[in-house]
Length: 382
Image 1 (tube, rainbow, N blue to C red):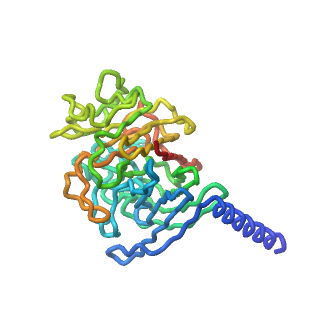
Image 2: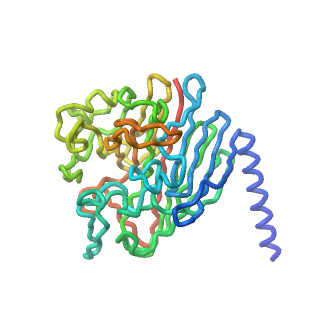
Image 3: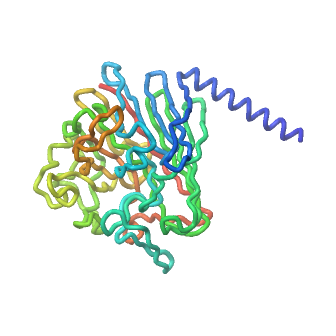
């Protein structure tokens, strides 16, 4: 009993020191009610702040990044991620604004995969494909949350238990997602997961970014660099062919800083698959960083506001998507209309349809193994 009391005292002292250190660094957090789902389940909102005015807001519905206030070159703050002002917007929404995606991000051909000789079926919600975990993925669940603090960051950890058979996936899967904000204007997202049966897993965050501010026009003049010399071409059903194709000589070449709109309307069959009427990007790039989170994977800058985003990840791929399916009818936060090509995503991930593609990096997770993923979004202004 004496040892337990000493342990508790030590833990309390450590938490107090971490809190004081975070406050000294200009970091703070709060949480409050965000509303209720249609069935009456309460949803909480966690607000993380640093000394530069940067503010990340996370809600427990979908473990969603609901808002992200970032200063521009003049120090003016603006919310740069698309989303809604209430729970019902997210419940009705189909664009996955800011959500944690699971169990399987991106597409599964025919909504099916085999594991150890057994076929599993996920509900098809993207024509014949299963997209982002099926009809009721992690984005439609209310997660449990706990504030976290250490000497360098302030954050929130969200957990969700996905039962064996949910959306057709095997195994009881426990998933943990932690958002952390630092005083260096970094937002870090760390994932952990474990299972009691062999399963497949591909988690990601589906934030839509507009560095000029959410709802402030399109992103065609914003400049992107993807450190990826290859991508995974798709069929007309947006399922990878299995090939790793070079980006050189194609509109998919972002190895040097390139305006997003420079080639978005090019006469290229891949762009027509992604957006048949006007063209657009919705592809997985195979990152040259090879899972090294210390190496820069992608960056985007907005010439007008000066905001600059750098992405670091230990995942092998990133889905760069230019919100091709936004059509100017979605009303988001503050009543703003989100236009076609009004944002971009950088969804860190394993490759789409990996369980059905033997040459792709494996997404299998077995009992006793721990799934981990780390993403760092670093912001600055020039």
